[in-house]
Length: 337
Image (cartoon, rainbow, N blue to C red; front, top):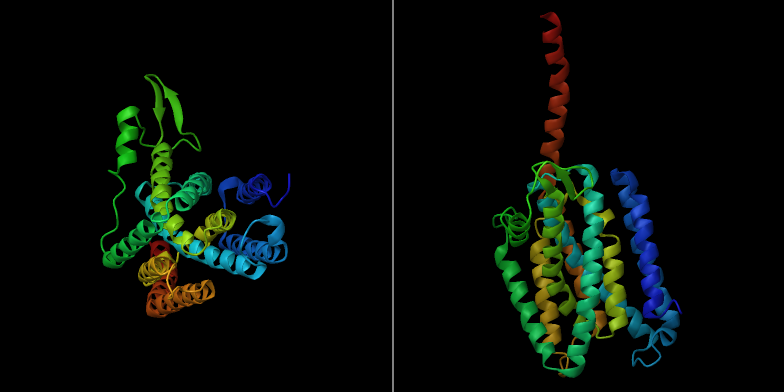
């Protein structure tokens, strides 16, 4: 079994998941530790990109891609999937807040979400690649879906946050089993005097699973506009998802500051949809151009968001300083009493 085969890469993925699980053992993840691991996963993806550049003929002997084309397609797909995965973080943060998930349980829930997303996307990539091979017109269905999703995301803007408390997974779980009001560590079920009862953790995992489905419906058609090589599509998705947990803990306190990110993602999805429509024409957009457009869009959105919300940080800092300043005075008054 070669490392460059699907089986070999599956084994590598399991090893990387085990490493990711090991580094978050105990449920405590500091921002410094998460930042280091986030950089590690990005570095690992870049190393794999270099491996593709030098060993692509070994990885895919029958591919029409040159080494350079394969490496560029992987990097573009990775950046695209990484960008779209940031939108997952907003939803994860919202779910954790609405269901009051304890901090020490969040790494475990995120791991389940990542594993579920990997399995789901692997299935969808296999199905999507076969559909595109057998029915070329599916490409235009994907393009129309991406344009619609981009338009919908653009229209959402700063609308009210979605309420997951009455979503389909929640209703299904509550219909099938009793649910307790409190968490019991990492247990999804426990037994009481009336029999088995589910904890809220089961509902959270069910909601995360649904979001995995929704995000896969956007990201898989999008990356097929970049490349239709199944191995590149799969590996780009795996490396984009591997660092998702660490990235969440880095950005957890900053997510509200990325006010232009949804607009940027809407533009990217629309751009990818147009690219897909033009693929078989004289106006086809080259992959290197797509790489530059995606990188610039995300960079501009992040910089503009941080600049616009800079006063938010200043006000929060002043509030914290005021609290610290007022605290000794309060203690002094109580002392006199």
